[in-house]
Length: 113
Image 1 (tube, rainbow, N blue to C red):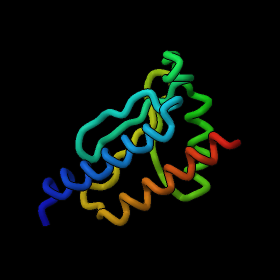
Image 2 (cartoon, rainbow, N blue to C red; image 1 turned 120 degrees about the horizontal axis):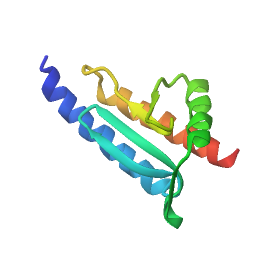
Image 3 (cartoon, rainbow, N blue to C red; image 1 turned 90 degrees about the vertical axis):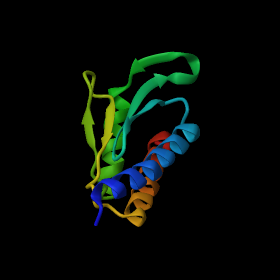
Image 4 (cartoon, one colour; image 1 turned 180 degrees about the vertical axis):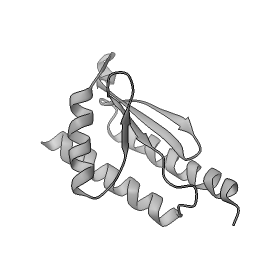
């Protein structure tokens, strides 16, 4: 199999899904960045109000929700407010879509908490 080609194609699906998630949660997701299958979300206090203060509390809450759902993501950034998403290069589309679904559920649960 062509890992590089797969990573590019799956990365595009992942990125599209993360950008859609940002549109659904524009207040808290300040930025989506990355390349291919290495993507990151930056969680902030209130992007819509122009408050880009890092939001490690929201990041921690999100992690509790993703963990409950068995979704493993990474945390990083100087202020601990960066969500890192870097699945295996041989990941398939179904797995990406399932991961995005779980991430979406986690954001929704966190916002309703």
